[in-house]
Length: 120
Image (spheres, rainbow, N blue to C red):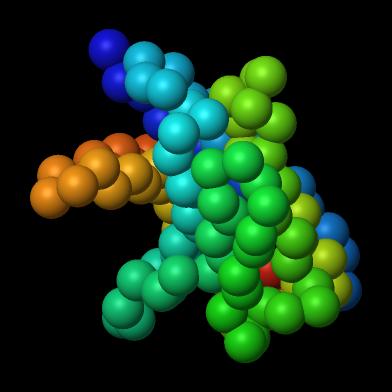
């Protein structure tokens, strides 16, 4: 069965750091691009960071550039999001997703999210 499970969320002070993990199973992890999204109360879900299937390319939202780093370990079928210099505006539920396009077919898997709260 396909499983995508986020972990590592919690409460952190402004300026602090947090490392999120996303463990995946049940599909060919190394064939999939991996993405981190977040959604704050009353706001739309937004793409935070993306990494290609082999880890050769990354992209970030302007709001997190220079502060967040996405990485992956295909041997462990896990993707990470290192978050530094956290701000209260980063407070949200963070979701991990896997994506693959094969011809006209698309495959997308989502985790259930992990809460990140930045507050003093």
